[in-house]
Image 1 (cartoon, rainbow, N blue to C red):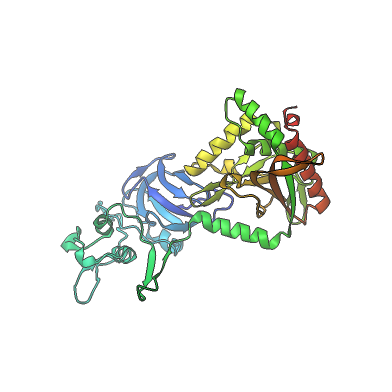
Image 2 (cartoon, helix red, strand yellow):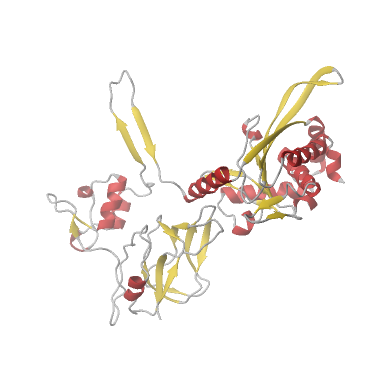
Length: 411
């Protein structure tokens, strides 16, 4: 019996996915475990494997289109089986467009081609093209009269339009206003919002406008940490960064301040005994937050290797849901970009996030004397529903003492 294949929920924040690539086509036989497609979620591009067996009778989503979770993307069944009632009873999401496919007839019922009837693209030119081909041509600014159709009677289909400008990315909408040259030219470009950016916008807006944020700032003398890092890297197998040292100090401090290592859950507060630290990683489309689990019990070398591995996976879009779920605290470091200090928005359900600035060489006063110093500014964003000012301040004092005497991180 034919069965629909739906867009799976591949992460806790996923509401829709983009069908990045099909690995099967109509008429292909599929076994359980076969790679059917690649799906782009808000955080990564992931393989979609079939849990069903049969022949692909219908594909309802073209590559590059978004589909809500549970939306129909395909139908599997026996070759030649009638599946029309499945689409009538449970129609595919309205945000998707059908894929044009060419299918060969079978003994009784053909595997239906999904393209629409041939219509004229223009009342004058009488160019024959499918609706999907016309839409793609319109989006890319292609004149259909210049495209040679490969289908019956010279009809233009999706493939013809795509081949007309092979390899070109989907055109962004661009508008130019011509005004006198001596004044200048107004111009802008609009691009579709990516899945990742949609989720970032939704989650951070919810956090900012539902969690009452307050901010605590502290200046750290990093001179001792700088000296210690040089000595560590003389023997460490993996190069240890200042971010690794900060992460370790925060992990140790969280064990001493469980009220900061907490989560707001609406009708209750969870005080976490384990320390799982999310590390914000910038990628092309936005931001990902992989999690270093049980960070308080890991060595600096272990932390360094893990963070580097996460950063590479994030850039390659190979992170899995298990990599980014379950944080109890988050660190965002922009020091490597030359930022002195900043405030960050809490990553829910965490109660706090620590914003880390760069190390600055400035004059400081020690023992009544002005001497060269190396300072780093930290800003702790706190959810006031969970963490009070004194609680957050005590936590930062512990972080400060650990960073200014880094030998304490090794015992």
